[in-house]
Amino acid sequence: MPSAHLDTFTSEHLPPPELWPEMIFEGPALQALAERQQLNCAAELLDAAVERGWGGRTCVVSDNTTWTYADLLAHSNRVAQVLVHDMGLVPGNRVLLRSPNTPMMAACWMGVVKAGGVAVPTMPLLRARELRVILDKAQISHALCDAALADELLAAASGSPLREVRWVGEPTNAIGGMGKSLESAMARHGDAFTAVATASTDTAFLAFTSGTTGVPKATMHFHRDVIAACLCWPRHTLRATADDVFIGSPPLAFTFGLGGLLLFPLHVGASTVLLPQASPPLLVEGIQRHGATVLFTSPTSYRAMAARGDELRSSRLRHCVSAGEALPAATRQLWHQATGLGMIDGIGSTELLHIFISATAEESVPGATGREVPGYRAQVVDEHGHPLPDGSVGSLAVRGPTGCRYLADERQRQYVQKGWNLTGDAYRRDAQGYYHYVSRTDDMIVSSGYNIGAPEVEDALMSHPAVAECAVIGVADEERGQIVKAYVVLRAGHEPGEATVKALQDHVKATIAPYKYPRAISFLQALPRTETGKLQRFKLRDAP
Image 1 (cartoon, helix red, strand yellow):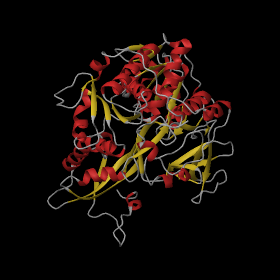
Image 2: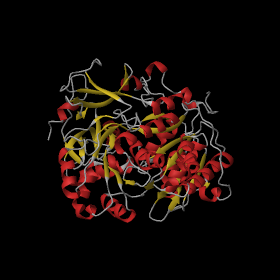
Image 3: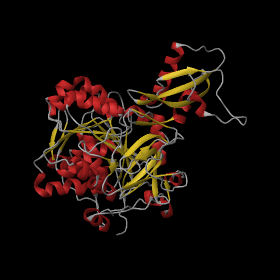
Image 4: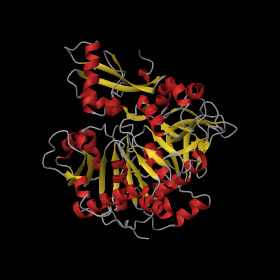
């Protein structure tokens, strides 16, 4: 079936076919999916749910909102009406979504995709500088943004491709001349909308991920990819039912959160709790208040929540999913001792959309991530892409029904080699087929589940007048997996000390997303470099 996208930007910026990973569709469900030419994943998840008779089931919950499946469908349809009739969206336009996890964020994601647009969800913490890169790289034409987050988007929008904005909620201050209220516009439209008949291989959404160069990459996910992800790990490992209540901390802008807190519960007719703020204390309260049964969060959060294990023992929790960073065996043991609950570990990536190696809590092995999820194949390879014997450490290579397609990015050549997705993780496989995480193979820093590119932090530090040179690395941390550590050479007239550390940290927080700031800073007289001036980053790993 030909593409339904009248705006052909995404199809024109796909990587060349010879650089795509080899896609495999094993098993009857995935084979049937591969044969479908027409598919709108929002309609497949939402309209089909109501057609099955699920319309009256609880679907999306927050502390002040409860929507049924029929409610979410109606709100999504009204969003689609606004996009098409008021904002001039044509299929294929990219729509930036900027909001914490809320029912309206879920409705906006579904409404964009139903209207044939390409959803581009972004994290609320991003600053104008980071948003501008996304606006330009994805050539964003429209935006739906929480009014409380208006300032950074407005700062990024000047001179960008962004044409139309609608605000969700009441602004905290004057927004100026750009955009109108989304909810007011929705009230003027009916709640019926026929989903655009997109091709299964039309792009449904773009997920941005940081690269080791600090320049974000946009991963392109087709409508077919969304449903494929629902048919693999959730079906074979999570095994949730319509009676489950999902809750968690990852933003819907992360594919970990998008899958775990929206796509997967909708696929089985379950309900999901969306919390705008999901710190460990708020998660514990949310689990108890909403009777949550399935939890998605990071090892860092599990360690913090274990202190309230006695309270959680009396909750309805039955599935606890950890991803976003490596799960230490000690954290798994601590959680079980505190709560009596096992844990489902898993590794996924933004490039492949969700988890591809995992194990149920009953089948888990301490220190191991798990086995290949049915639908995916994995192997550990050497630097030439040759498979290594069990017990050897090498690069993790994966293929399945989803795979990496970067939007107009030469780094596609590094991520996909010989038809395999190379995740950038070093692993070893044991004789029982379990995969054991060793480390990252690149300079990415993974802290509390967030991917942080060292050069991006370096750029922010270098914009401070006190900094002459700097280099950033990730160092091991018991609580966060890794933390960002900066080595700084100060300009003349500036002295090292706690006041300078705080000033630099505050500067980074104000320049880029606050979670990227260096939690440790050391001062050096000079950075280690080769004779040609190239930074010897590896030497910093042994520096104080």
